[in-house]
Every structure is written in C-alpha cells, then in structure tokens.
Image 1 (spheres, rainbow, N blue to C red):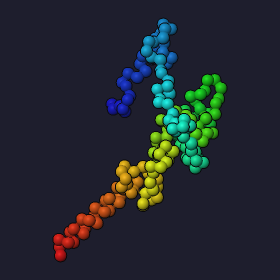
Image 2 (cartoon, rainbow, N blue to C red):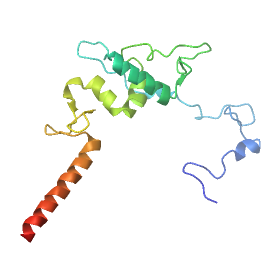
Image 3 (cartoon, helix red, strand yellow):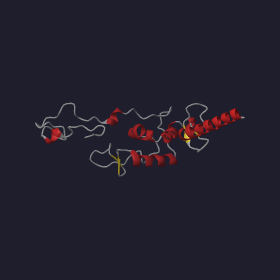
Image 4 (spheres, one colour):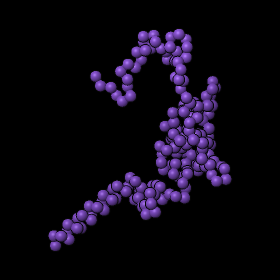
Amino acid sequence: MSRSYGERANAGTLRRNGAGSLFGENGNGEQMEGRMIENPYKRLPPIERRQDGSLYRMTPAQRKQANALIRRECCCYEDGNCMLLDAGDTHTCPQMISFSVCCKWFRWAVLPLAGTLEAEIYRGRDLKRCAVCGGVFVPKSNWGKYCPDCAARVHRRQKTESERKRRSAVDS
C-alpha cells in the first residue's frame, strides 16, 4: 500500500482507541504539553514602509488584481471576511477595501504568488517591459530585455539561428 507525502500510517489511531481527542486532551481531561498551535501570523515580519513611514500604495488596477488574488489564493479570506480578525463576529477583510498594503498575511503569503504585481507595487522604478510580450518584469541585470517566460523561447530561437548560420558557412 502506497501513501502520499505527509500521510502517516497510524494517523488517527490514538483517537480511535480513546487515547486522545481532536482538542488536545489525552483522555484524562488534561491538556497535552507543547501541542497548542501557535498563530503563524505572529511569526511574519512587519509590513514594509516607505522612507517617510507611509505604507506602500496600489493603483486602482493593482488593487483590482490584488483583490482577485485574495479571493483566489488567501486562506484567511471567506465571503468577504478575514478569518484572522474573526473573534466571534465578522470583520471585513481590510486588504480588500484599502489601496495600501496593510495586511501582513497578504504581503508575505499571498502577494509573492503574483511576482509581477509584487514587483509593480514595491519596485516601481526597477521594472522593465518585455520586448516580445510587453509584460512587466524585474530584470536580473541591466541588460535584461525579456521576461523569464519569453527569454527561454527567444534564446532558443537565437541559438538555432546561430547554429544554422554556422553550419551553412561550413558547407560553402
């Protein structure tokens, strides 16, 4: 029998045998030591700010992309509400209604999934446009001309053309 990555052979057997519960009790009503789950939000670094102390701002187009990204990818977002702020009553996700980057979870867990959007917000002046597709990208050097997607295709085409030219020069 094969198991997927991360699946344990004895997963759940302690609970079935009465030796533990879903809520961290060991059958005697005592809390199991070291088993409380820490809030991962607290371990995230603080939100970056500009030199003057203000938060980074998004344009309306960037905010629209960010909201779509939040709806699609954020694990703390549910029906317009933020689960991290939920303490019994519902709270609207602050990142959905703000033009500033104000949520640490969005900044460090969701925004890196869209590299170009992150680059547009945080590195506005360091961006270049791809010569092939016109997309925005952060160049690895001053000579960067193509986005990573187009670079592989362009360099492959240039290499085949160079080889073809070299072979034709040898034949004549």
